[in-house]
Amino acid sequence: MIHTNKLTKHFKNKKETVEAVKGVDIDISPGELVAFLGPNGAGKSTTLRMLTTLLSPTSGSARVAGVDVVADPAGVRSRIGYIGQGNGGGHSYRVMDELVMQGRFYGMNGAEAHDRARELLITMDLQELEKRTVVKLSGGQRRRMDVALGLMHSPQLLFLDEPSTGMDPQNRANLWDHIMRMRVEHGTTIVMTTHYLDEADSMSERVIVIDHGEIIADDTAARLKSNLAGDLLAVEVPLDSAQAARAVLGRAAADGDLDESMQNGTARFRVRLPDGARLAPGLLKALDAAGAPVTSLELNPPTLDDVFLELTGRSLREGVDV
Image (tube, rainbow, N blue to C red):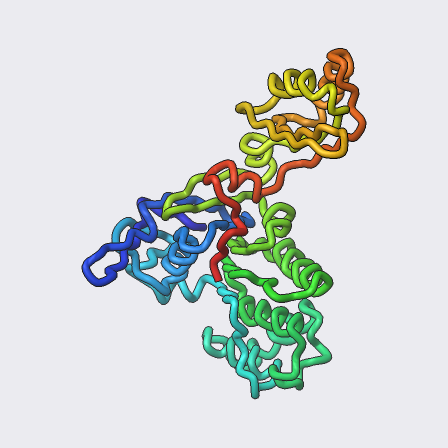
């Protein structure tokens, strides 16, 4: 559904050339749901703009939905849906009119556009709002209408740019329920960006991480977390047994990653483990045998932010594209 070869974008800034995207290779198969992550300035938005024909590449090539983005940008646009961060509907227009108009833009006749709009109103739980003007919709209702607009022409590929930004948890959950149901029913390929890492973790089948214009990771969220971050084990032992605990945990720590702090007669250690659930019981026994009995324990699975911290030395949340 998406294939790029050394896709590159440079910008001229006075006498300086800024390499925003440095020859990325991307392959996304039909039906996949892929999360595209990267901090501010990483090249994520520039890459997506090239894939959606909003920017022309400096070099390299890209085929989207089987069409070359440079040779036939109109052909690409006819095959994709794009839901940006801003609202797509005109404020003074009614919901049904906006959907029908969108269908007509894509070549549907009046009857086809009305039938498709009616179908999407039901699917996106907007059927009671068809005569309401866009400006009177709530934030969650507007986002659902944006998704309906993007789906009017039944695109093979849907780009979702921060689809749930600014929504409360209930509306976020409702929106994703609608999107996932549409995906199951129509087999739509979805490429999304988000700064809600729980969305990328739970919804996507693959995560692509870009930084400094280059793809630095491309795998399932589960494998990225397991291979790059590991579980975080935090234990507390009596202060007088800190030296013994340090020796045991230091041998187990991945890459020597062991943090410690002392307070109120207790030594607290934090260590990354490649397979915490499996290794933790043995570590507890080893600590006890070394004279460092554990008085408190926490085991937390890794997050995608931990993955990005491991890859780049900074948190994904330090700067997010908007």
